[in-house]
Image 1 (cartoon, rainbow, N blue to C red):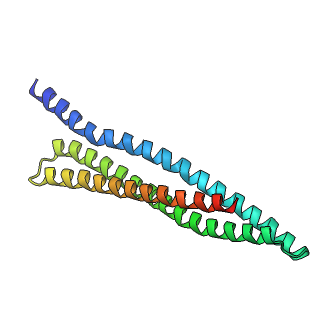
Image 2 (image 1 turned 90 degrees about the horizontal axis):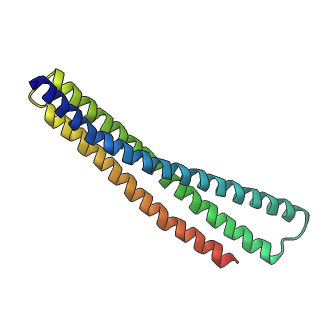
Length: 158
C-alpha cells in the first residue's frame, strides 16, 4: 500500500510539468498561425512589389505607384523583424516544453534513483522552462506592438 501511495505522488508530481506542456502547446499553436499569416503577408507584398517594378520598367512611375512602393518596402522591412520575433518566441516556447519534459522525466527518475540533489535538478529544469515561456511571452508582446506599427503604415498609405 505504501508503494502505491508513493507512485500516485510521483504521477501527481509529474503532472505539473505536463500541464505546462499543454499550455505551451496552445501558445505554440497561436504563434504558428501568426508565423504562417506573416509569411503569407510578406509573399503578397513581394508579389505586389514585383508587379510595380515590372510596370515601372515599361512606363514612367506615377506618383501613387512610387508612394505605394515606398510603403511596401517599409512594411516588408518591419515584417521581416516581426517574423524574427515570432520565430524566436516559438523557439523559446519549444525550449520551455523541452525543459518541462525533462523535469517530468527527472521526477520519475527520482523515484528510481534517489540522490541528494535530485529535487534541485527538477526545480532548476522547471524554473528554466518557466523562464523560457516568459521570454516567449515577452517576444510575442513586442511582436504585437510591431504589428500595430505595420498597420499604421498601411493606413497612412490609403
